[in-house]
Image (cartoon, rainbow, N blue to C red; front, side, top):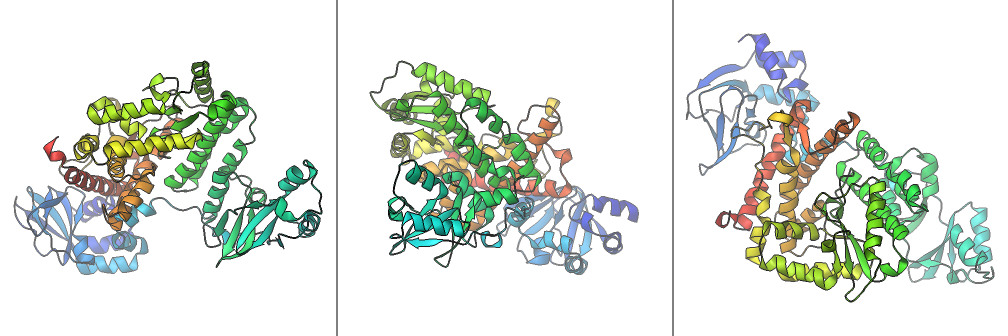
Length: 600
């Protein structure tokens, strides 16, 4: 093999493609080509980095356990070059390796920043870096212009407060009730509580002030402030620093500065007066997601925004199609990815209605149909599994839902396990929240301490094979999806369901997988480092799927869970392999934790 051939080969491997021609030549001119028989130990891995040209090398720990395989295009053992390691390597089959001196690698790591960053970062950090941060969203709150706070005592008259508000060009006034308690009066309060209710302007402001400020720390990200506005349906947040109010962040100021930013979509949903109005906003979601993704916003932040938008749309759609009386006797819930707050693009509906025991409404079927038709009009397709409130199975009394849970616990069938997995991700939308909470509490009481049941519930975590071959290469589909792999089955589902199973066992009420991982780490199921790896791996899978779905939508194709390996950069392929290894590590944890070897 000529020097040119070796250079071309190395340029196909990330991160060697980051080297300049001169740097690459320095490696090639000094490397050694070595041949190893099957079973032969690779010598002197402390002082050399090896690149596999042909064959497979196996890595073993100090106990002789096989912990990794390196096929064509892989390299090892950089961990010894950087940090040192006790593992050994031997040829799994006849192999040809490039042997590169450690001194050259360390020199290039120090001279080439991007090349060096790759080796210095952990897998978690590499996965994290793949999702770049948008500078606008990650400005600190204190870095944008804030309205200076107008603070008055509770004994100030409404007239004097409005006068000071006007003089300072403020949209609100903070009312000091003493003992560290504050309230707020907005221009909207003046119209609704003073003018329309004909209250004298010489009354004290405490009469019309709203207590309980929504506050944010000045060092928080602007993204978090915007999310608070979306979540609480407010137009301003009070900014604090060291326990002191330093300013007001107003929606109107943000809109004037960043009027083209799509994240304010949710703030307009509340103003919709009809399904037609909602449709205009709902149709903007895909475009919103596309813009956010293009701007480099992390996928889990996009999910957070879209979840809030969807929640508001579902709420408004139910209010527009259901009588107010129904809200007093029922709880509308969403499930599946929407219940976990992990829906990005509209896939299908997963909703249910928990009714108060004894409540009867002769028009319930028609109301349910109207709601589902409204969601269809808004672009949310019907659920193929019929998990919708038009299906009586998902529209029933709290007692009937509880009876279903008892049936799940007593009869372990694939259908029952699936229904429980759907229901356990329930998120309250509107109506009686206590009904939803009661059902969740009941589920935990019946299944969280049932070890046998939990083992069967967790079993689907290992149902799908991780799409890596024995030698660490991708195992792609054949036929229609040739060259592609199912990222949901291979990576997303095992993490989501495995974490869901652990969350049920530990009675964790959060439904979002990222939040569940954090809580499981807090209660000691796994350490913080592994929790971070799981989070970054899951986000990487979701990011790849989102990118591919957006690409297919632009081509007029139906978005799905398949990603094309050939469209990934070498760096992304490398990270995907690392992410799949984290999945396998997690599967081993689930197998051991729930003793799946005894039932699978």
